Every structure is written in C-alpha cells, then in structure tokens.
Image (cartoon, rainbow, N blue to C red; front, side, top):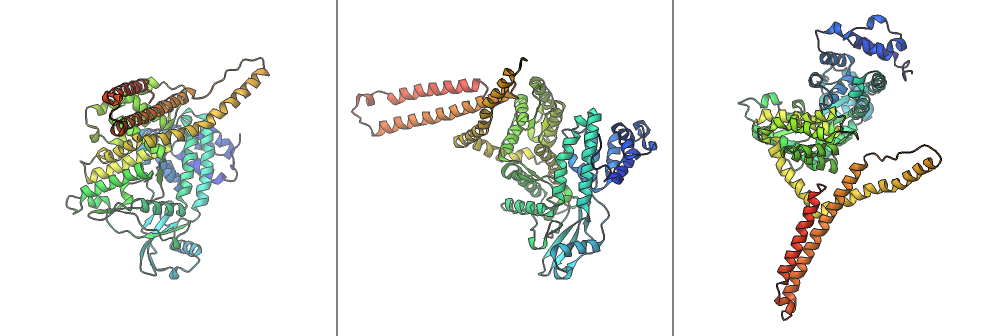
Length: 558
C-alpha cells in the first residue's frame, strides 16, 4: 500500500518524520512503514523510554509547535475534544500559542494592492508597517481609511493556503496508516478528526467566511447594547484581506483588578446572556470566547473579535441540548442517557443500563450541592468523556459548544464569581419549554418527523423484495436485519402517543365549549337543560381524559 502524493510531498514528510523522531515518536514511523517509503535513516528510530523525562502529552505539544501553522491550528481545534482525548493531552494543547514572527510589510502591501486593485495610498491615509498582532494564519495592521474611519486590517499569510492543503493531505495519509496499525489511533478516531477539522481550517483561511460570520453576529446582537461586534467594510475586503472597525479597549487582566472602575457584574452578565442567546435562540455562537477575543471598551461595554471559529446548532439540536441540560439539573441519569443518544451516533449493542449507571455515578458528585453552583461546562464534558468509553460519538457541534461554555465560564468567573450560567440560562429554558408544550408546535414537529420517516417506510418493501429475491436464488438462509429498528419503532410510538394526546386535548376542549355554548343559548324549557348534563358530561370526559393520559405516560413513550 503506497502513500498518496508521497513523492510530491517527500520533503515535508521528512520534516515531519524528523520532528516526530526528535521527540520520541520515531517508533511510530517504523511501525507504519514510512522508513522504507521515504528512505529515512535508521537513526531516527527511537524508543519512547528514552524520553521519560517528558510526558507524552508534552512531547505531542512540542511536535505540533515545531511543525508550524497547520498543526498549531489543528491542535487548538482538537483541544475542544475533551470527550475523546485525555485531560493531560487537552491541557497541553491549550498551551499552544498562535503567535509567530510577522511576515514583511512589503508582502502585506503587495497582497492588499493586488486584491483591492489599487495603490495602498489610494485606499488608506495611514497603515502601520508593524502589525499589532501576528498569528499562524495572518496578521493585523492598524489603519485609517481616506474618510477618516479607524480600521483593523487582517492580511492572510502568503502561501498559507498551499501549506495548509499540503499538510492536510499528509495528515490524512498518516491518520489512515496509524489507524491500520494502532488500536489507540482507531480509539481516538484520528481519521475522523482530520477530516472533520480539515474543513474548519479551510474556513479560517477564507476571510469572506469570517466577514459573513461577523455581519450575521452583529445583526443577531442588535438587541444587546452592551455588546459590540465590529463592523465589516466589505469594499475594502477580500478572501485574503479583511478590513473592519478598529476597537480600542482593555483586556480582562486590566478589568479584573479590584480598583479597575469597571462594572464587572454587568459585564459578566452581558457576556453570559449574549452567549446563551447565541446558542439557544440563534443557534449561531462564537465558539472561542477566550480573554484574547474579548475587548472591554468601557465600564459597561464589551466587544467580541475574531470570528474565524463559529459554532452552529439547528433548531432540533438546540432542543436536544436543552433537554440534556434539564435532565442534568433534575439529576435524572436515564433522562441524561436518553438525551445523549439524541446528540450522538452510538453502537447498536450498547449496554444502556450500564451507561445509565455510569452517568448516575458521575452525577453523584453534584448531588450534595445546588446545580447553580456547578460549573456546567465541566459537568457536560464529564458525561461526554464517559460516553466516549462506550464508543458513543458525540456530534462535533456539541463538543465545540462544551468547550466554549468552559472557556466562557472561566471569563465570567473572573468578572463575577457569584454569577451562575445556569441562573442566566433559566429564562431561555422556560421559554423553550413553553414552545415545546405548545400543541401547534408539537403538531408541526410530529408532521415534520413523519415526513422524515416516510422515505424509511418506502424503502422497507424494496429491501424486503431484494432480500426475498436473493433468498429465492440461494439455498442459504438469510437473516433480515434493519439497523436500529427498535429505536425507530420507539420513536414512532412516541409520535403516535403525542399525537393522540393533542387530539384528546383538542376534542375535550371542543366538547366543553359546545356544552357551554349550548347551555347558554339553547332552549331553557327543554327537559335536558333541567338535568346537570354539563356536569355529568364534564365528569365522564374528564375521567376518560385522565385515563388516556395515564395510559400514555405509563407506557413511558411520550
């Protein structure tokens, strides 16, 4: 089996191989056969025991730092996967600093002029030659437009797209080889990780994507006067240049001082409130709200910057996440487990009872304290990590959200140690529950679910026919197995019961309105009117109503 593009990228492969060997991972190269393919010298082979003075996690971080921009950004993204990787590795990956020497101003000038189709002096009245920030993907210069507006100009690092694409190709090959040879590579799903985050990296080197993210977030946050999103100047932006409003202010280290003069309680509440609105209402949230991406403009106003990483949750995902949080706050292990199943892919042979018991064991440490005193991000990740041990693959949107919550909680805690994310989330939770219980919304939801299952039903006869044809043409017995059929039937049961509930409720309401209207405007001389028909009818209807509800809820499939 040959490596794709191995000759084309041989020099980069050798650089990666030498770096791995220098930090004690040469034995991996030998196991996957890279020594033979790349004609590497045997001296690169090393035993992990030779590097016992440093932990494996530390050496992984050093390898990533040595290999440059692509690996650093990938490491930062992977640090969100607390559900998969050990705490020691996550801790080291979080130390990765995305700070590199700036590239020459002449290169930035040439790139801006090329993309704007004009000379620099005809675009800006001033632009700093020294960048105010430099990272692996690009750097930022302060400038002023000809009309006097102060701007920040992000310029993409030259040739970064080519470097990133080459490294992603190599990483894809290495992940495939390692997954074939090492059980730990399969356990940590290296191939899936590379594919998943490779796309995220491509978005980060397209400033059009970041510009759209900023514009959308600015629109969503219009109702929050204490949070500012910088304005994008589209006429001065491209895929490689992003020109935006320049924000001045202080960092968290200044604000958290005892005599800073900032309204820290208001700022903490603003950050928590706006973040939860992004997650639970808009389904579009800043996924990296660390202190470096928050600027405190004045004593009561903050700004968010850097929208290269954005998380997204559709309506169904938002509902599933709030169900998960409600189950956790109610400390119901089975409900937590059921919520997890809706947020992940899981094996058919999972031991549901054992998983629920493990969840209950985790929740024990929260039982002796009010849940609003618990750091919700850590509680979420504890359960996500347990899920991984059962080969449950949590969707990346939720792991990204969990990482963002942990990051935000640490910032909010510095501003207002008494503020609980759970307390701030309560109004949003109540609103979502009211929407969930609205009969019209439930009916719409079930109709939509029915449409989704329609194709599944239509496929069953075809699959049965194909199976029977094979059976007819063979003397070997065939076992027909429809994956996850029990789960599907259980969901169908719930849909039908909920639909029955809505119909019963509607019928009960119509009967009562009819009886009241009839008694009010009917013929009072009628013998029936003289009898307590309304009371009797109400009693009979109410008893039937309660009995049917009891039957539905008792089934446990509502």
